[in-house]
Amino acid sequence: MNHKAFIQEQIAEIRKTVGDGIAINALSGGVDSSVVTVLGHRALGRRMKTFFVDNALMRNGEPAQIIKLFSNLKIPVELVDARAEFLKALKGVTDPEKKRQAITDTFYAKVFVKLVKKSKARFLMHGTILTDIEESVAGIKRQHNILSQLGIKPEEAYGYSVLEPLKTLRKDGVREVAAQLGLPKSVAQRMPFPGPALAARIVGAVTEAKLEIVRQATAIVEEELAACDVFQYFAVLLEDRATGIRGGKREFGRIIVVRCVNSVDARTATVTRLPWNKLERISRRITGLKNINRCVYDLTPKPPATIEYV
Ligand code: XMP
Image 1 (cartoon, rainbow, N blue to C red):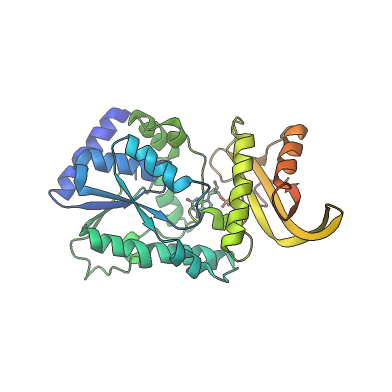
Image 2 (cartoon, rainbow, N blue to C red; image 1 turned 30 degrees about the horizontal axis):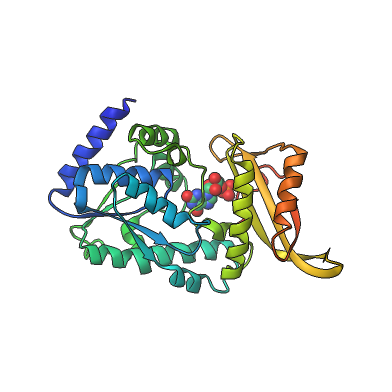
């Protein structure tokens, strides 16, 4: 595929569809929404409104880093602080599917719908890729129909359009377009990060205290494994506790799982054979965190495990 031609075609298409209207999109920092953001801004300039929703579930410093990166590209991104809304929706929810549903519902029905109204946008741009469409059709993924997720019914929604400029591309194509658009490698080659963010890495109910623990453990794992050329690595906080001993005193502490897997398309995954001294170092640093007295390395491939825990 000729990426330059693809970019020009999509910019022309966005201009033609939106005319002199306003379009809106939500940026997560992932490669798909980042590419949509750049295409939208190249096509529409200030009539493209991009929002970054802080859902309280992001990694250390992530919202600020992403906004700064786009500011360096001269693309304004408005930060929306929706942390309280997401934490409220997640309170006491332990079932994995209910947790995921609570996050989707809060995003679309509570937060994004307000932004759509406030911005007076009639055009919503979304980073749907070909694989998302295929998986929706095959019933693997929950449906991606944004208008229905926003609670906008077709009859009320006359005039609303969803633009999906990446819907003919797969992930590798999006990464190539990202590089062609001048997005840095940290975006173009970004490690997959799930939509439910750190909530996918806390088994059981999500609380601010648990988010802080998993955030610190994630930062250690990402720092230690940054140089590894593997598909995905992260930390998970379990709901169980274990007895440990620290400073001569017994404590009933928390358990962190480290996961590091190789994969091509995330449909199957194998566990990475990390060097023992690297694992020991990670374990030492993680058990140095307050109240964590056990660190385990997950040896399970996919299948039978999934990559994430929730
Ligand atoms: P699983 O856990 O199903 O994950 O083996 C496969 C890949 O998908 C990522 N993942 C998600 N990505 N929204 C996403 O955009 C999600 O809800 C989601 N859940 C899992 C996961 O990180 C892995 O790369």
